[in-house]
Every structure is written in structure tokens, then in C-alpha cells.
Image (cartoon, rainbow, N blue to C red; front, side, top):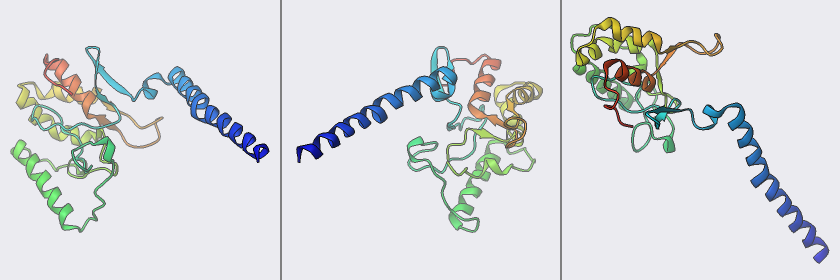
Length: 198
């Protein structure tokens, strides 16, 4: 019996050390060396402290900020611990009502804006954590933000253009704007560096 137990325990301990300690340390070390920003969560740092991640959206409701894509995560918006979409079909009355409410909120915040509302401003992504909006969704909000901050529309539009990311490797996906990065750039341009808190 001892002849069977000893090799089993030895193998268990060896594999525990290899897969539970050495392998994670090696992978973490390689990732931190080759991709330090990504391996640390793609954090956006301002004044020496993290204010968010470039990979997870945040909720902005103040008219002087760009609003991101709605989040359908459980509990609170952009809840990383409850990532997931609403799974509501296009004919579901709850989804139709949610979209109507989002359209009403956008129109209430900017009643003079007659442009078509881009779909990504009224529908949640599959994860509910999307940090990006389309350039069209950012352009839709430029007038509201310029009025709220008493800035020239052209200055705000230039910030949108500067913060628009192209397709991945020039081929994949669509151009996009990271909402947190754009709002931080907006605060820096407007001289409100301390106004936004994570």
C-alpha cells in the first residue's frame, strides 16, 4: 500500500509546485516583461494614480462628459464581476423600453440635436463592459459637450479625432473612441484636471 501512496503523493506535490507556483510565476514574469501595460490591466493613470482601465467602461452621466455605451451588467453599470449582456431579443418589450428610455435621456440632455442617434449609444454590448463608442457616437455628443463646457465645437471635435483609434492592425474591427481616455483629454484641454474622480 505504501508503495502506491508514496509515488501518488510525490507526484501530487511535484505537479502542485509546477502548475500552481512555477508555471504562474513564469507566465507572469514573461507577460510583465513583454507586455507590462496589458499584463497590469491596461490601467489609465493620471497624477500617479489609476483612474480606470482602457478595457472596461465607466458610467458617465454629466452632460459635460462623453457618455459611453450602455451597460447591461447585473447590479451596477460596468460591473466587471457580472459581465454579460441582457440576452433580450430585438422584439422583447423590455429591450424596446430600455432603448426608448436611453433615446429620451439623450434627447433631454441635448434637445436641439436633430442628428440620428447612433445605435451604440442606446444598445449595450455583449459583455456590458465596452469602453469604446463609435466615432459617430462621439460626434453626436460634441455639440452638447461644447455648450456644457463653453468650448468651441471645433476644439471638442479635434479631441475626438485625436482620440479615435483605427482598426486593429489596420484590418480588424472598426474605428473606435475610448470614452475614458477622451474624457480625460477633454478635462486636460478644458483645464479641469482634478474634476473627474474614478
